[in-house]
Length: 237
Image 1: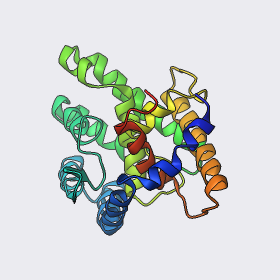
Image 2 (image 1 turned 90 degrees about the horizontal axis):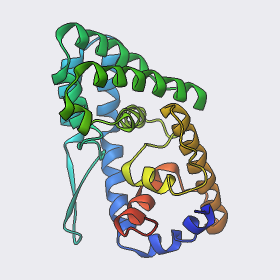
Image 3 (image 1 turned 120 degrees about the vertical axis):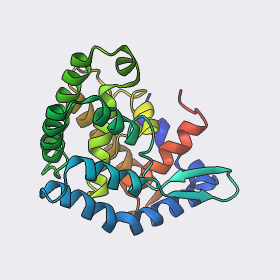
């Protein structure tokens, strides 16, 4: 699918009832940013262990934003389902004591903010490799069925966003689905490489929409609502 085909739907999104509701989500997320940032900083600095970190993050993402008129309840971070907190929960509950310690240090290192896209790619590959080894080692078919490497990519990218990083997109469900319909997606065994492709797609789409709308205020975070709109209507898949 051509990127222009996607960009041409931007005005439809602005005319929809989705756009103003996402503004509410963004404002609430902005209010929670200092709290989530401090939680992650304490963990990275070694001031809390992974068990405390898990509980604090779980509570931080649990807040709901009720979107009047749409009969849906949108979470502030959108990270409470299988790709996010439940996935984190599975990792926590499936590891033994020694492995939990290893997970603590691995996660603490990889959620540190990347310097550039290649650094982001390396961090994602590092964590996904760890998760893949975990999935293989458990031998649990249920875990194999309900966990995917892309969940690890989502979790790491969302932790970056929770620290206020605006230069990298979150690997959200709908944005991933749209991305995989485009020529930008070249299937790779490297989740980090897939994320790098996804990053390029987001930047090019962002620039395309800015050029079309002449609105320089559009951000990668704004595209999140756009992808949600396209995904809810199943426009491209």
